[in-house]
Image (tube, rainbow, N blue to C red; front, side, top):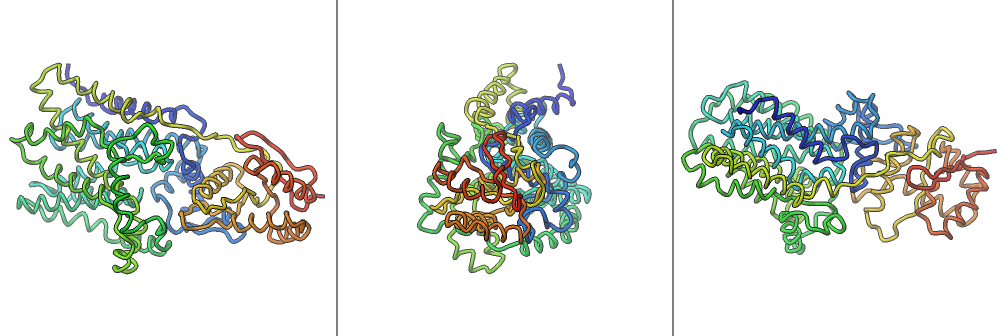
Length: 531
């Protein structure tokens, strides 16, 4: 029985539902890390941010400007689908993102000569890799909304091959731009593909220059605007994480661990980070020099992918290397290459496509026995990569205490005295997630880097100090002057003694605070200026 074209998207949609489970049905927020909560807020804030990247409902009282948004594509999608509750929209984007990305990778494999159903292996490899699972688990699901990279590879491979057309170049330029707007990491991965395929065409002496030059024609103006926004949006964020030359040996050990596949303890002490290639795809691409020795087109794709893989495994260079290149060097080194393993998207895409081409040949020669490859792939995804078994959920319920009043809220959390960033990111992302539902202004900045502090931390530190020393009246007067209407005490996170002391002091501001225990925590909402 011949394969029917409509079976491909149906099979890959089913794969996406399983791989992202329970995203297709849940009302909560899929994700192991609090970044997922921040991404939900980002979707909810899209209608406010889209025009000028400013938000009057965060960073109160000054408001906030987010010059370096995580994903411009996510902003547009948040605006288009604003009628869908943000937590539900986020979950749906996970499913749709994995399905469409896998389908695009399957199409790239077919362009390389693979045939269905073997071309499905490319889509499964692309979206079951460690980078995809990490994006789903850590909460930046827009990394998995990635059909643009395979579509760019497909169009650019045609543009740099004999017979390439201007249309191919224009499509490649458009897909490159969409990859870049989705996240700068995908833009960097697309850049590696662009260079590799271009050099391959030059080596063969078969470039169609009109097709090749059509892509930059699409990109020049948008790319100039993007770079300006990127540079104006902030400095070398995250520079404190880059490490240095003395840490290169440790970096290589950690990179090797991430490339080897998710260990049993990864979700405990590995921050869910994996850059592993599915084993079935790696085995197939390793057989390419023998199985495809009579063909040549795959070599450019395989060598480009291998080069991207080597770069993804490289250590981060010390800060002074990038500083010597000036402002642009700092932005590239500190902001974009803090996690070089994310360049591995290009490697996984190319290896999956070449592997599917190898599987096509095996299927033609091996008969029914070749279908065991699909069984191996299923076992690899479910038992080795262990998705969706590793996924967790955060409660999608926002504490009802916030609904007891209106006006700006100051969330009061305890402070992490060791200066570790994880606690600040968790509290900020949680407060911003709550804001996506209660819609009241908050003091937090909702897009933070590891080396930045939210204004809410400064306010809560000051307020806690005033309450502990008994200066309650002056503190209330100052908050009322600024415009805060509510103090939300997150009591579960304080020690019993501190919670009792703060509660007694805040009772002088509001003797009958709103209280709720839904949403997974106990919150007391004290009205500033209560009678």
